[in-house]
Picture 1 (tube, rainbow, N blue to C red):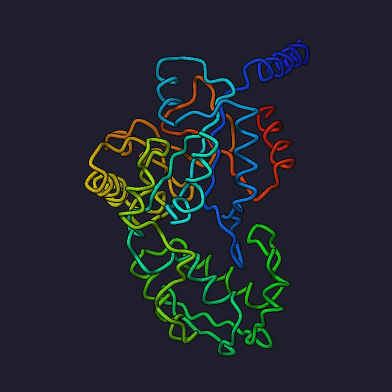
Picture 2: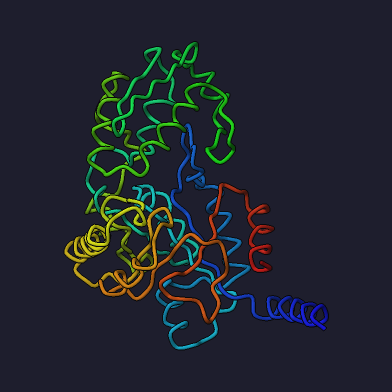
Length: 344
């Protein structure tokens, strides 16, 4: 009897998914072409345009706030699609906005407020600039992290040519493989730095910059939005600005008081600059604990996006909205992927 029940339940779920496929929230970060992209954050403008053309044909693109309102009112959300961007890179304004307007597709850009108007890159991009670009570095690096001394040897990879960079252009962190000691160093440093308090991480990055004899100013291609660009990005009503904390921490690693500050201060900053309430939030790194959720709600947000890969259903928690990560696929590949997502 139990086997029959399970089969019936599975069949019903399949039929339900086909008839009521739910909504999808797409997670992008950047629309840009770069020399290296270890975290697969970039979609080229050409491919992004192809994605938008597919979305216009296949689904029902709507604002995140419209989806949130429909969930609250128990209105249908089936085959709705929401486009979101995390972090607040400047190319969201220069490359993404014109294409979104061309295809008449709304989007939400979640901005890390600590990066606004800054000349430094996000710290994961800074590591890429220091370690994965052509040039010559010292043979070894030694750092003291949390009272423990670490040493890395680059060997022949101390010199890294343009040909080497092009050879390793497609290297990604998720592959688990490191083609050179430089990639090994990048992976190791990321793992050591990711959970550190911001001031400790910045102190270590300063030491790495000195070791690499690198300029303190980051690449203009990797910078965050300025206040003026953020205002222009929002103008026209096609794009909503949401909050993404101040320093992009792993919230689950912070005390509750620090989590509250990160969440509230990012909201307050954006509201001061933009002059209206900010109601959408995104958890950096998809990181949160149970106690984080009421902090987001108490701050005055009415929805929050996480990084769980799934569809949004009518009973989805508005403060734990699932999203699916989009990569740099051409239009045909994106279409096949989108269809599979609706069949999850």
